[in-house]
Length: 110
Image 1 (cartoon, rainbow, N blue to C red):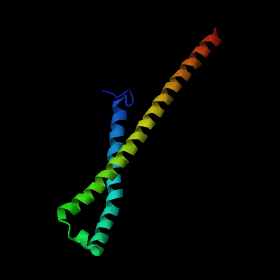
Image 2: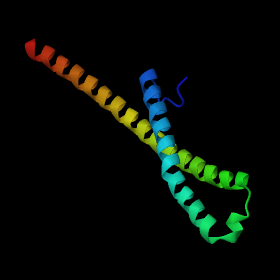
Image 3: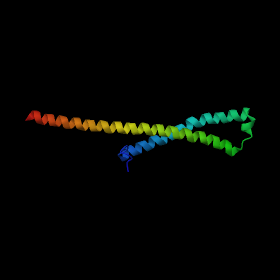
Image 4: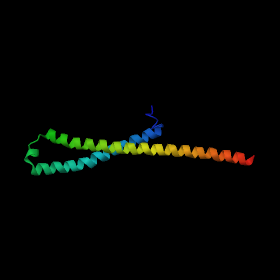
């Protein structure tokens, strides 16, 4: 069922899902790599970080990846939604223009 008519067709929903998935993967990698680097730096230079448990270090890494994935997926999903709205509006305008031309041709031929 469409939410407020934003994504009306199955194709729109499929495209939005794919964009969200790619955004989540991209965001997780984008935020995960600096978090991994920060973990290495913290391990070599910080005795506090070195004394943390492995589970907490893993939690810190996964938190950064989750936040990045969420932010990027949301951004891409919103872009896909805007694109779907633009395409739907364009199709409606094209149909209205076709109807106008057909009416004009009918009137001109009379």
